[in-house]
Length: 87
Image 1: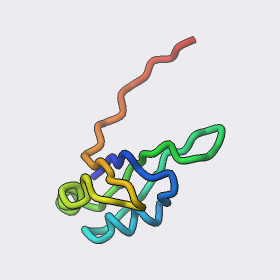
Image 2 (image 1 turned 90 degrees about the horizontal axis):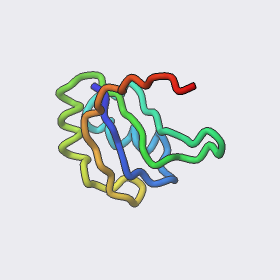
Image 3 (image 1 turned 120 degrees about the horizontal axis):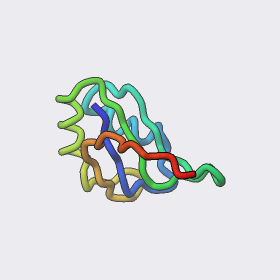
């Protein structure tokens, strides 16, 4: 299950996020989205959980709770929309 995590502290690391979600089940991957030019966090990321049940439990438990000093927004990630080429 893929989960969106928004309003992340710019200081939050992938390890911080994995620790928060790991309390609810196996975490397959964590990806904090970073600015291409500066390498700084853009304030959101994605967590992939091993199964849907633990993902849903993590969403309900972590949404609006603090990770690294900021209350995060957590919900099921929507599939990525196809973007056409703009030439």
